Image (tube, rainbow, N blue to C red):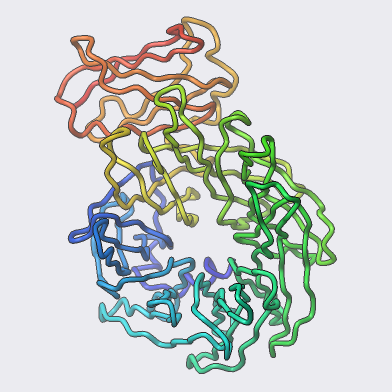
Amino acid sequence: MLKNILILLFICNFYTKHSRAQGGFIKRHDIAGYDNPYYTTIIASDTCYWAFGIIWDTTSPYLGGTAVFKFDLQGNLLKQRELISKTQFLGFNNDMYAFQNKLYTSILTPYSTSSIIAYDILSDSFQIVATVGNLLPEGDFLSINNLHFDLLGNCYLANSVSSKTTTDSYTQIQLVKFNKNFQIEWSKMLGNAKIDEIPYSIENDSTGNVYVGGQRLKLNYIEGDGSYSKSIVYKLSSDGKILKETTADSLSGAIYDFTIDEQGNYICASEILLPYHPQRPFLYPAYQKLEQEGKIVFRQYFEEAPKEEKLYSNFSKIRKIGDNYYALGGIGVFDDDIQPLIVESRAIFIKFNKSGNLVWKRIYKTGYGIEATNLYDFDKTQDGGFIMAGLGAVGANDSIGWKSMILKVDSLGCIIPGCQLTNNVGEKIGEKCFKIFPNPASNYLALYNVTNHKLVIYIFDSNGSELLKFRILSNETSIVDISNYPVGSYFVNAKFDEKTISSEIFIKE
């Protein structure tokens, strides 16, 4: 993708080459002065990682800001630079680009404008290089912002614009093109004032055409009245003329990110609604290939939790690396085994080939309770692995704390090395049905379920007192915070169907 091309110009001692491999890790960071921070975008170079993030207070009046962060290759936070602070409304940083010694992102400022921020790495300074408001005469406010640069340095900004032409409020897509000097070349409104349309991603092709992917929305999930939404992609020329409008019907569909293959087809990270129960529909993460005429070449769902437990999910980011594609997303499931009505969220990372066949899938969970693990962006690292950015919970159920988080995995998506070699085993009593890493451990312990079954994990101290109980899905890696555990030996038991089937001992240093 363009993000990975532009970073070749990125400073951070980028021309130093390293042959040593990086292992997997998880790092959580406290952000001084804010209760609820999280990283939203990340870029990897040969010697460091950079991220943008949102920093929020969790008490009224819920002020927030955005900041840039620098990490070493071990995930340690080296620098934090607050860019915008203490505002009452701030949108999500969806995208990040790096070139000419600068990092770029976009941000919503209180309801009315969307701004492009440039952070200068050399001078540790920043400036707002462009700002655009609602261009509709009858417009109300902006929401959703997406940033994109083409190979020539032109910049595109897409927003969801609320209009009030009737007593109801609908949203249209506002697309603005800036030249290299961040002067507006043209702006375009996409959609109409009778149907909600939301942009989630922007792309370019080699001829200069620009594409906007998102969702055309007509939904009423609960009443089940047959309403629907469609995945949608607009294709425009370099001068802003609409060339093609592609839609794909489904009960519910959305394109959160996409890339374009050699034939001009769209490879999409999506969500699809599968209504197994009329009062409790389920959004499944899906990846799909669409022709420009709207034909679905393939559509694959990621179904990891049982149907009766599914709550919400999507794939939000997609990258093409070599001849394969990688997608990152999340699922939310009810944890009725541990505590009724508790919802756990997990991150999903998959690899699939150009024919749509799944190569491997990984699941990560870093906390136990509501909204436990959310990863929003990823990039390939110099050793062939991947770095991911988001947030993770610390604690269990009633004592959840939030921290910004980055997660490093190897080229096979493993935090624990060799996770790809351990499928379909450990189903009999006496066999190892999970792996732990590292052992001894000091801050975090990773557990990997190597079976095709959902397990319940128990951690006991040397006196036999239960410290933690949680569920772990098939092929899932779960991260346990043991930083507050006293030094000593601990026992990990795995139960399936109410029977203990495997036990391990780990040492806390």
